[in-house]
Image (cartoon, rainbow, N blue to C red; front, side, top):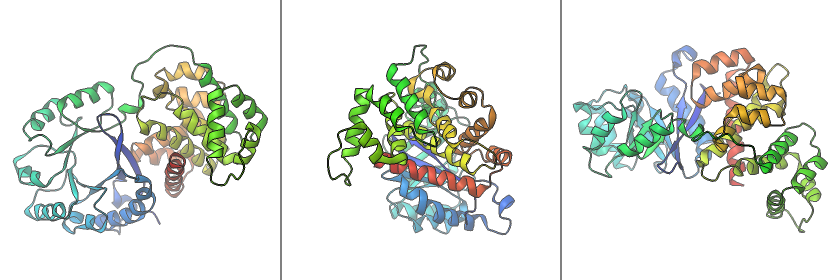
Length: 402
């Protein structure tokens, strides 16, 4: 049984590479679990989510986890491996001697300690020698004020992370101020808006995505589309022939498509479509596009109303196309050969698909009030949503590592 929602948000370095994820749990435990102690619930959540689903998808990345005061005093973090766990001390934890002893002990055991939503004060000064990361919420502490504090700390002793970074301008300002890690959705917005026509190859990929989103795949249509693009043709044959189960080399597109089957074709097209946009983009942006596509599709499948899963898949996949191509989404949508329901969801958030996409975005940002509101509108239970998210994360991790 799952006790609450859990989402993960990427943490990027100065080059926009993903170095870790913060695992965010639902607030207000008393509303859902009045008879469960918050620290016990946190422990169960860590066990259920961090060690199972999310731990397996972290790979070499760090896992940033919030710990309430009592769980720190009880050394709950020591139940988990120290190599890629970042222990976040919540901002409402009082800086007591008891907490300092716990922090000292865990730091000595090799755990990296992070102070979350840090507000500089004399009381926290004695903690700093044992702290590896300090997180500043730039909506609370300005970048300028944070810089004043950063400049006082010897270089390299503590890594500083800027939270709630929403624009590229803020990202650049935070870099200049001395921050090395960044959290927020600045990376999922277009850097430079340019009005230009879609390249033919992009249109081909969009048409391919439309085809693979259908319940009954038209192999002939896909064959014809792939045959028009040399790069796609090469990637398809390479992809198929690299499989360990292929005993004789596959030479024709039709043979390759039939061999792959519906599910693997969709994986292949999804991956190639996203990876063929812009090489300069943050790696997490590609994964998020695919994860959104799968998450939308799974929610649509579990929705009590009649919502087409293939259209939901496309809605999620194309929701970040403006960032990948640095063009306005409304311009891209006008030129895309896709259903009107998908266009409406992407442009104005209308219809059932618009609600599904809004729910997915709210979940990613851990906006649990909005998640609850939208899930009620869509007739989805928290278990439906949790399972769909976990499955989408696993599916994407499998796709990107296969």
